Image 1 (cartoon, rainbow, N blue to C red):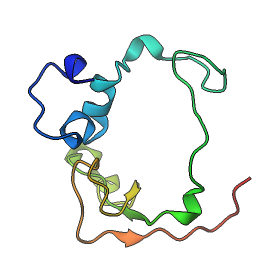
Image 2 (image 1 turned 90 degrees about the vertical axis):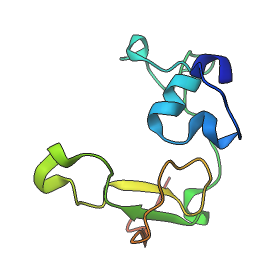
Image 3 (image 1 turned 180 degrees about the vertical axis):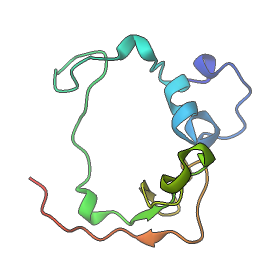
Image 4 (image 1 turned 90 degrees about the horizontal axis):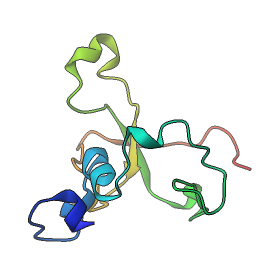
Length: 103
């Protein structure tokens, strides 16, 4: 992952702190557009993990998108509170409340 980033890494969270760094570290680029994510063994796939309802997920406004005008301040950014791989933590982030059940 460090080789794909092409930069000096001081700590593990420097590899993938934020969506851009994560994509560079995992070589996710536009060549993967349109791939199905439900194919086991595919180049890009989703795998099961922890039940998200058990995680301290917070929601906050997205960052660095002033061009989004009235949408810039909406709470469309979700992350696990205090996770070191999140690029920027928002002190105003609110706990995310699940409103519907998961499968």
